[in-house]
Image 1 (cartoon, rainbow, N blue to C red):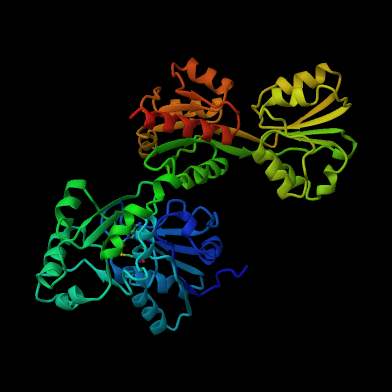
Image 2 (cartoon, protein in one colour):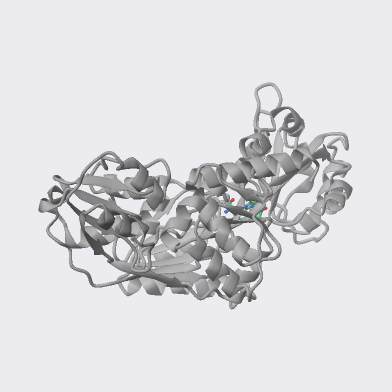
Length: 496
Ligand code: SAH
């Protein structure tokens, strides 16, 4: 991979919001940059792949308040690069489309700093596309104009030639300026566009909570107001807007659109579930309630073992810090609890012999019932369950426990806790995550509908007085998501 170079500035577009629309190049640069200066409007999780030691600077706002002034941002970009760092300047959509990327490039040129531009998928094309509206269409609209709606058309200093824009023979796409809709509509009609011409507004296009509305140029201001349309939104005027009703696809492709879900898992694992939820259209609050703490451990010689059980991806990673050579695992039967654990092993070139259907110790016990072993190793968290260890020892198997990490409750900041409790759903994949969110929430899980991964987790929930709304039939992350989807569909069908 071609990583970010020292002393270089990368003006990178992060796309309109759906993480899947980020370019391969943007992800590569985010993963390697020393410093990332990012705007407010970038995809959730856009920075998930950044180096743990990267300096992440939010230039979208100062302490939750005002936007960092452009001069200051430009200065920071130049200074970091001068100091020899690789700098990613991450912007929503495309950096050169109403993104002030051109000015930052000029500042780099003036300072003699090398820069690269990484275009992004721009909202003006993507938001309409996600609302089923092609910005051009053969026989309907042969041209498209991108326009800032930021300016007040009534002001004399406006840079926009409104009569010319009204006469433009094609689609008009307005960025910004939801508040200017009455003036925009007025000016275009005054310039000769028919009030009956189709128009559309797409709010938070490509995000899970995208909303869109198709109307006419004349009715646009009042319809948008009635619908409570807010920034960020793209406004599109032209006959192509009418295709939005015919070609709408987003709601079908995103069965969880508009649903907010709190996920409570240890960081590394939460992201995988979070990403899946987002791809189904959910908005996700990830509350890391567990954190793993690496422990010093001794790895016994695995060559003279005939069974090794891995219970978690973390366990796999930790063992491979000690056993760099996958051949150490060539002899014994390798059992992985859960598909994530199996995937972690495969990533190290080890294909597990057994991945029990039930992702729990019980599943392992069932799957090895008719096999004999003499010497085993179990890799698990220090505070893990004793069930499997006891079982093997009862069977006379000489079993060593390797605990290369422990888990402990992560302190949840109040803002995140409130966001989690305000969600439509909370997903629990383990008893310990139930306990820690419950604790962080001050002894109550009231608010979200609770989905539990299986009976053990449900038992913990009930102990704490929480009745799960749904319990997964298959006790895996996939099963958990499926249970959620079924519940959402059922409640929608019931009008809930
Ligand atoms: N450089 C960006 C635009 C930045 S200007 C790009 O190429 O997309 C900010 C404006 O972009 C917002 O006011 C809004 O009009 C539009 N915008 C950005 N993301 C959007 C989204 N997901 N849905 C709708 N409009 C969006």
